[in-house]
Structures are given as C-alpha cells and as structure tokens.
Length: 161
Image (cartoon, rainbow, N blue to C red):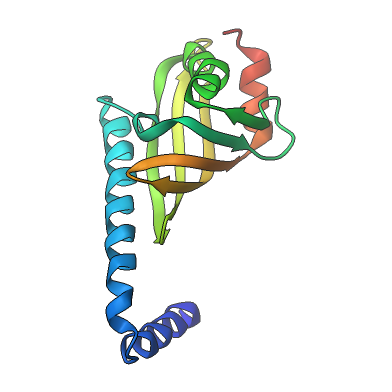
C-alpha cells in the first residue's frame, strides 16, 4: 500500500511539471507493449497462439539460474528448438498460464504468472514465472526468465522429449 501511495505521489509530481507533456509517448509505449504481451498470454491461455508469436527472430532469451535449460538463447529459433518444443513434447495437456500481475515501464514489460499442465506420464506440472521482456517495434527483442528450476528440472529429467 505504501508503494502505491508513493507511486501516486510521484505520478502527481511528474504530471504537474512542464515536462508532463513529454510523458505521454512513454505512456503510449507502455499501453501498446502491455497490450501486445497480454494478447499473447490470452492467446496462449485460449490455445490459439502464444507470447512467442511476438518474439523477434533475432531476440535473446535468457533463462537465469542453474536449471538444465539455463543459458542465453540467441534467436527465436534457438529458444523454440531447445526449450519450448522439447517442453511441449513432454506434456499431454498443454501448459496454461494465469497472469498474477503485469507491469510496464517504457519498453519493458514484466509478467508475473503461474502456469500448469500435465506431463505425458500423467503427473501435473506447475510453476511460477517472472518474465522481463524488452520490446521494440511491437516485438520482444530481449527476455530474462525466472522460474522454479527444481520443478522444471524434475520434469525435464523425468520425462523424455
């Protein structure tokens, strides 16, 4: 609650200055980027698309930490071929996301979400993720993903792709 109050005060101060007019494009960028990312998650949840549809061909995607998949992936195809397709091959019921919160600051969108599905061995997979996405011209050009690597690694090792 204190953070919201502080943000409200800072927003009021920012818009009471002569530079307030310059803030409008920043807000437009944030709204556009939020809309793109949210649409990708809505399509993912509905089974009609995914947030990876907005991934630039030359994007970098970093899985942080010590997971078996942790590294920087160079390009959309590198990431899809080495993480997403092998992950999906391990699932009998697709992963369905549920956004807890989504934030934007300029070109950066942060998505905090849960996702769950069922692996081909019948065991549910559940994880919580935080993605930090840098957007440019309506595409994700850089991503940093955080998640429970123990849950991910357990699935990756237990179920062959």
